[in-house]
Image (cartoon, rainbow, N blue to C red; front, top):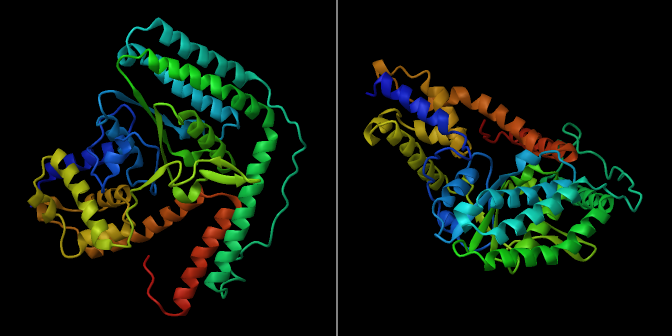
Length: 408
């Protein structure tokens, strides 16, 4: 039996650590494969996982494990949400160099020349941001392509037909939006491109006179908050900025809501997977449920340890298939599993030996499914949202008609 006081402490510890804050003291990252090692390495990476799987925690925790001559610069793209392009790229670059400027003394020592280099870059970016966005070509609004996928009329559609419909329309829409974004801001982008060689020369000089720090890791968190049509241009510039310099990027994002690379009229834009960066996949899926459950348990154990619960006391909180059902209900995502655990824990009567079983989990599963649908709406947009939701309900109807079991 676990005392009510210990359970209250456990609730507090989990609640305060469900979301990782930049300047907080994050709980230790439970390493999955080589993710932590890769996040510290001198290589470009994109970290892919659903929300709540630990992308931000991995970035923050890896910052404390880097070699002595490497320093991280962290920025969260949520701060630039709905900002116009290409100003959002200028703001991101400005944030990077302002962070360098703030840490000049602690990282690089008192170097007057270093300070001048960084301040000159910041001033140039400020001037560029204030300049008008020139529109050299008329931008035509793209026409609606194809018919919408209906959730009622298409219930009998075959899965392969649905995939073709959704895939073709999404690809055309993405290319059109990227082309519009490029044409709308061609002149300002051209100015940024023309400046890039001299900007890189300034950075080389900066590192040449540095006696302490030899490498900077640029951590770009939650890229998916930027407009989908702008993401490849932002990634493209960061990639070209880092190339042949002691700069490396770590981009954390949702794979299904991100465009890191496009081919624009035969000209590559962005960074290409396996060529320009290596992927770090830290998603928790049901492809191997035993592995996913085994990965979630140490995370809960780490919180219990901080709350001074023994492993035996933590195990006592569950009965039968309770924990496995909790992992299922949370979709394998650690944050969701922990959130559901908190909900159930509030109904556990510790003084009377209350425990968590499959029945307790089943009650809250429906509300979690509804929350997931809302998250899907937030992570997608417009036609993508309609297609994704339409696909979910087509599959649901198919399963019900065929009398197949469907969870949730």
